[in-house]
Image (tube, helix red, strand yellow):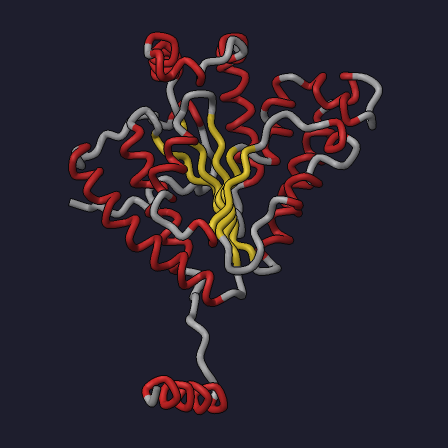
Length: 289
């Protein structure tokens, strides 16, 4: 049985969200998947240490999904074993007044991982072509446009182009970009939202604002489909994971990240002759104490 899924969900060519399953339909069992995740977390820990030691590149993981698709728990389960010094998570909420006073990419530049680091964007610059496409009036807060009528087809073409250019620039300057969409069904989302209401320890996760957004589910799916088709490139690929089974989404995500890090050709620093001599002398000094 094939237990590596790193290429199975890569978007190649035209993406149709209606033709994409939200369920895992393979032979791997949940118990097998959970054991596989444990083994893969050890690989990720070793690769993250290598990335940190190499110090010449960084990895940016972008997570996008509808509410209750499992972004937070995926971050916890996938990255729970890495050294926190080499990993940073940024969760993007609605922009602040200060952030609105800059262009829509500004706050994302500030959060980019430095060389040697893994950066995780929990939501990202894609909100500007997702929630802001479903609610175009939000763009007026940028104060550059005077009317919702300004947000025509050309406006969105320019937004996609800005995102492509942003990600291409990152890829050309040492940051590898990988983008993951957790594709959850409307029925599964309903179940998870009800769980948040019915289970007291999950009440804090529920927001009354989740329901009006859920009513716009079809519009969001159209926005995701458009964004993914416009921006899935070799230098910044999209992976669409079936997210109705959280355990499987975690396995697939960690394998995609491991595969990406392995392709970065990371190396531990090599000492020169001078450093080797100093190391030998230090060893003699310590052993003679």
